[in-house]
Image (cartoon, rainbow, N blue to C red; front, side):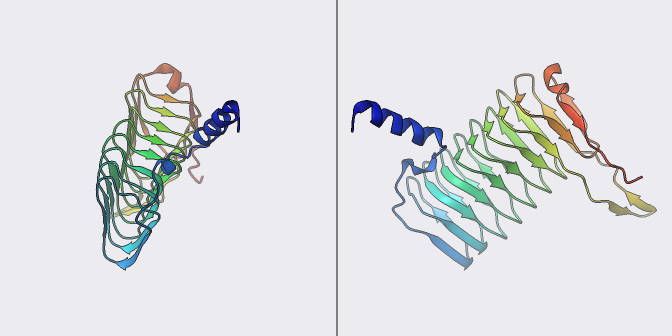
Length: 220
């Protein structure tokens, strides 16, 4: 193979977002119904799949798909993943996280730490999302949570607040607590800021304010 062909091949692999395959998976997979999983520093696994348990990964470790149902995912610095998801739990990381695809949870916050690179969506339903000097390759979405974009964060897709279900108050239906969207002066949303509910806006850059799209249906 010619040198030019080798360079082109390497460039294609990098462009495809294959962030995880920098390490060979030397420890196989972890698959449990009961029990947590702990990955040591510089250890590299295939898939990690739990039902009732949390995942902890030390610095400079890697895995492909990391998932649990009832448990949190706690990552230290410079962890590499294909994706991470949970249902009842948060996803938190130190700095330098690299995720080829998405981060998602239902009941929990997503705090990827500073300088994270996430190739896909960042999604939760009941939880906050904080991105600091980071990049999200697609949409950032929540329902009942705050979103905070600080530093030179770039969201290449949309920021979306999906519609909320109504909460029963003593004298009827009430939905008075607004979530907050904060976008710092140097943060960029390349798509739109789609609001399908009332949101408290704290947007420091007028160019980002112009991207706000109201799609609120009050049912009347």
